[in-house]
Structure formats: structure tokens, C-alpha cells
Amino acid sequence: MRCPYCSSTASKVVDKRDNSDDFSTRRRRQCLRCGRRFTTYERIEKVEVVVIKKDGSFENFDCEKLRKGIKKAIDMEKISEREIDEFCDTVTRKVMTSSNPVTTVEIGNMVLDWLKTLDPLAYMRFASVYKDFKSVKDLKNEIDTLI
Image 1 (cartoon, helix red, strand yellow):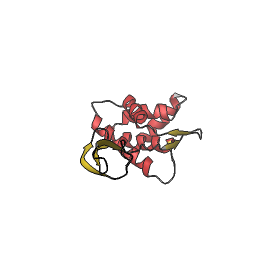
Image 2: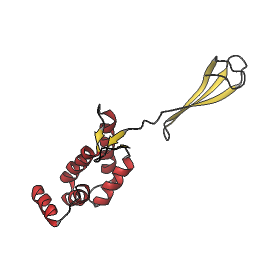
Image 3: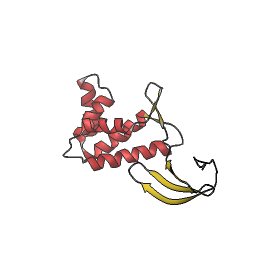
Image 4: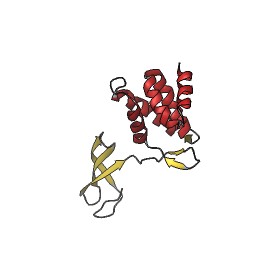
């Protein structure tokens, strides 16, 4: 780390504080050459994770988009905010740790599997949009698979 006053690379850390809100570390340093103090910040670089859409195009994974889609389908009295957060964290981990790009189809199927176990009505709401039902017959066929 270069001193902003004398450009020396010799410094020592006098104080270190972690900030859990923005996952940063603040370090107070003292230059060993001129003795002046300065502050540096260390932050985790945000990693952009790409998913493959149904049409073959690429898009950055957006956990908030996933969360909004789930919230539109569910009854907040049956599924808590905490459960949604935990599920979104699980999906995010899968997307980030996968060796191959994850498709939105895989993510959608994960949501459907999760909703099927918790709230069948929310499953149907999500499936009607996700699977793009064209007719009542499509809806009936999906209900038949659910029962």
C-alpha cells in the first residue's frame, strides 16, 4: 500500500475494523517513512453470474427478480419472508457454484419443486406464468399432474 503523502510502500496497520453491513474492512495505517496516517478500505468484488435464458441469450443472475416472482405467486401467510430468503440463498449458491452456466429453466423448475411441497396453489400461480399456459386445458393438465 502506497502512502498518499510520500509514496512509500512501507506502512503498518494501526487499527482494523470490519463492517458487516457492506462486507468491507477499514484499515488505519501509519507510514513508516513519514509517520503520517491514512485509511484504506478493502471490499469484496461483486461477481457477476450469468444464466442462460429460454431463448438462448445470456443475462446476469438477479436474486431480487427471483424473489419478486415468488412473492407474486405466494400467500404471505403460508410462506414466510425467511423461507423465501433461505430458498433464494440456496438458488444463489447453486448458480454461483455450478461449473456450467445455469439455465432459467433449471431455476424455474427449482422454484416449482419448492412451491409444490409448500403451497400447491402458489405452485399453480407460478406455473401458469412460468410455463406460459395457452388454454384452460393446459391448466387442467398441470392440476392433474399435481394431484
